[in-house]
Length: 296
Image (cartoon, rainbow, N blue to C red; front, side, top):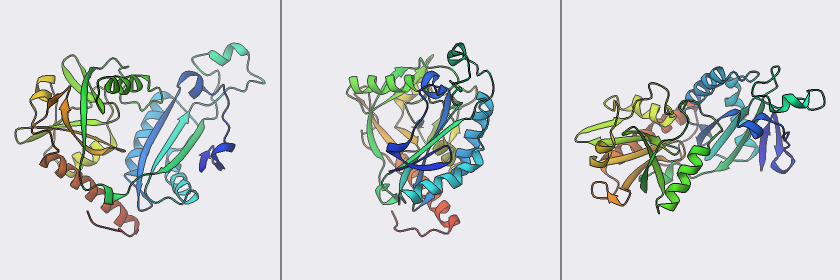
C-alpha cells in the first residue's frame, strides 16, 4: 500500500511522522475524506473549499489545498484504485526538537510557523454498482456534548468516537446527536428527515455542526429540501430519517432507540436522495471524461 506523506509517495511501512507532531500531541489538524468512483474523485472542489476555510480559521499555514486534486490522483494511480475512499490529514507540523527549547514542545501556540505534515491514503470501497439501495441503520439519540466549532473538520474526534461506542453499547449501528432539544448531526453524517411531504435538514448556521459535502450536493440537486431547526419531537414523528455522508452515501434510519421509523424499512425519500446522489456522481465522471461502467 502506497501512502502520500509530505509530497512523497511511500510504502505505508516506510512512512515516518515525528512523535512531537502537533497532530499527535494536540490533535492540532484538519482532515478530509472523499470518495472516488471510476477513478474520479467526487465533489473535489467542495472538499478543497472546506479544507481551505478550515486552514484559514485554524491558522495552519504552508499547505495549498488546491494541490489536493493532483495528490489524490497520484494516490489512486499508485494503488491501482478506481473506486476508493481517500483520506487526507493536514496538521500544523512538528517543532524542531534539536533546536526548539523543550518548553515549546507543549506550547499551545507554535513559536513560529511550522511546516505542516500532510498525509494521505486510499483504500478500496464498492463502486456505484453497490449504491442501488439505501443502507438500513438502527440509531440511538445522544446528547451532543462535543465542542461548539462543529464546522471545523478537526482530527480531534473523541466526541465522535465516544458517540460510536455509545451506539455500540445501545445495540445500534449509529448515533445521532441532539442539543437543547434539537437535532444536530450524526457521528459522521448529516441528517435529513421527511415530515409529511417535506424534506428537512438542520441548518449549519452558527457553526455548531459540519456542512457536509454530501449534504451540499443534495441541497443543490433538490432545492425543495428545507434547512431549518429539527426538534427531537419532529425526529421521533418523522415518516423517514436519513443519514447522508461521504462514506455512508444515503442510509435510512429504521429505528430510533428501538422505536420504528415509519414502517422500519428504507422509504421512497431515501431512495430518491440516493438516486440524486448517484446522478451527481455520474455527472462528475462524465465531466472528467471517464467511462461509467454500469447503471444502477
